[in-house]
Amino acid sequence: MNRLRIDVANGIAMVTLDRPEKLNALLLETYRALSGFFARLPRERRIHGVVLTGAGRGFCSGGDLRELTDVKPAERRRFTTLQNGLAGNLRKAPQVVIAAVNGPAVGGGAALALACDLRLASPEATFRFSFPGLAAADMGVSRLLPRTVGLGRAYDWLLTGRDVSAGEAEAAGLVARVLPGEILVAEARATALRIAQGPREALASTKRLLDREAPSAVEARLQARLMGRPDFREACRAFAEKREPRYNRG
Image (cartoon, rainbow, N blue to C red; front, side):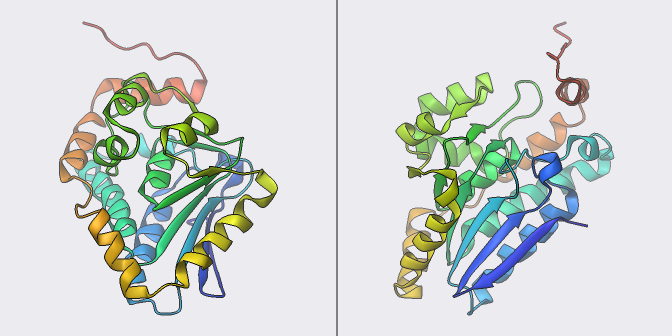
């Protein structure tokens, strides 16, 4: 089960990551389902805008680490290519895609929010783009994050792996607006509907002009290689056990 809900009303698709007990951690099937949905959007005439959010108190805690630690060596590149393909399909969607970030967005979850055209957030939202030693940037983050918040902040956020609050994210330009949680999704839907009232071709053309490149295939290769390192497993274990990782410094 991929734990993804898609509801369409008045031309706006509400896409909800629906695994609240795990802060909406992404299973492989969820990656595939999301990628397939966004890949279909260029041919989808009844959908004029998309809102992406998470069920419960979190937006998305990234890939399910218990599942990822069992990925076989031959499948790692396939997985990281799937990740980048999801981000690429999202970026190429002609419709506006708005992330309603209602809580923590971590790793792949932060990358997913970044890949959207606009981000609205509740005060409870936080962003963490990496775990030092766990993996490099993925899903286009190495290109999109500096373009969005500047190179200096991208270095800070990626190298330290610290949590970025909704307020800091808004000040940096990552988040367009911080809104009370009780109106966040409704305002995201209203914004998507307002933008979708414009001519479809002009909207798609504007998006193409602003973003001419797909997420880098270099990221997929690096991610696959890093997933094979002992430090990756140690980082996953430390995260699951809620402790500081003990990396080999030799």
